[in-house]
Length: 588
Image 1 (cartoon, helix red, strand yellow):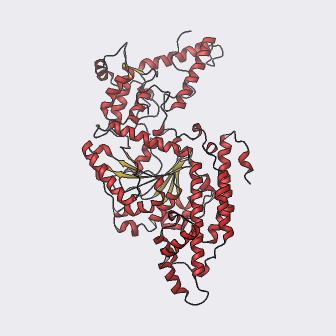
Image 2 (cartoon, rainbow, N blue to C red; image 1 turned 120 degrees about the vertical axis):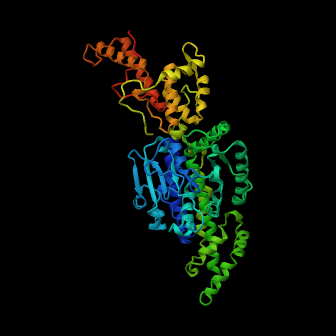
Image 3 (tube, rainbow, N blue to C red; image 1 turned 30 degrees about the vertical axis):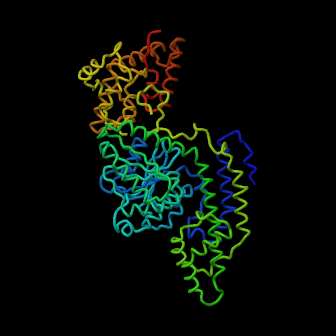
């Protein structure tokens, strides 16, 4: 059956795909019959589809309103996405799937659940009230090539959470949590509050506690002493809710692109951000292992569920007294749990929540339950010990990092670029022909920094740029835009560009992805123009470059290679094909 696993083992991508196909076969032929026989889908989880196995890793964001969930997504993408709404009031009132697509737009929920390519088909059971509050935002961002992010409505207080939504909010959260690879719960450090509604939502995630990470957001809004107290209060509250012996992993930071209000904890925020990003980077690499793990957990739960339903059916009378017997069995379900645990040597942790089982059993007709079928149990046992074991060689389940690394946005890999800050829509005019930067006021600052041979080092520039209190991710982008020749130093013109970009960012503008011509220093612009003229002269006046000298041709090749490297490494000075060769041309 699994002969495909032995084929092309040397090619990691093919092995990666074949393991997914193997999981589909194992589930549909071995596990699904057991689930269908004992109504597993009515008690626990809907049927898994092929799209569930093929889906990208999913990150689920949960939190009360105005904790920064949507802003967190914007921070990761370093751009807005279709349908984004951000504000201090409860703005996000829908479940938003943020996924990759070259064609940007918004897909409504009703259209999304009928698309067989997506894994959201079973969400239709939550009704039209939910589907009108469900949508997909398609974004052309390289960050989303390997992950999908789920933005959720802010959890409200009081009856608005349970009644006014018009659908089972906790049920939808649990549906996404079961399929998510990472669950991030955000708290606002500036106004820490854990309402009863949030507590109940977190309790529904208890069986997925291995996926949960906590983010204490907006930590720059308070000073170091207040932060210590807020962190302690959060840990104390989480200890009462999660009820696990392990300490929840809490990341402290401020995930937005605005200046820090209190800059004292900058180093802490940067280290915490890098730790969180490293964790998210592992999700695509471990996606197949996680799917295997979830299928194993599901198989164990389905087997225990079959024992429970079979035991209840065996206790039911064939004729009279069915109603009273049903009530007695539901009331004494804990006794049945204990008996099954002894008879079949089942771990207590494998049993479903007894209160939830009792609530669902109230609505069931016990006479329609199936008696225990040992053959189905035997098939699942053999699947766990043999079939799954063939799919579990870890070396084959982890594809090369080059194929799974999350790239772009806040995950942009700065390695290989000379920048002291390693680790949108542009508001800049592209029509101005003159340099729009008032260089004189920045020259005064530049001269005070004691330049050496007309330039300052990255360390000196970093100290000056950090006075803006902007996050390192923003300052790193400023550096890459302003260090035009990429030598790791800034001359007076480049320093003026950097300070101008910082000034515009502090005024509320977005940084450009490319340096506009209006910001390019005049000296550089003249070199480009002179280079273009010499290229045309070398081509015999026809501009086609057929008569370039060998030295010019070699220079052009080097320039093309340089620009390709720039494009691969992130938002650099990028030009179209007309400008590709307008670098610093010199006379041969």
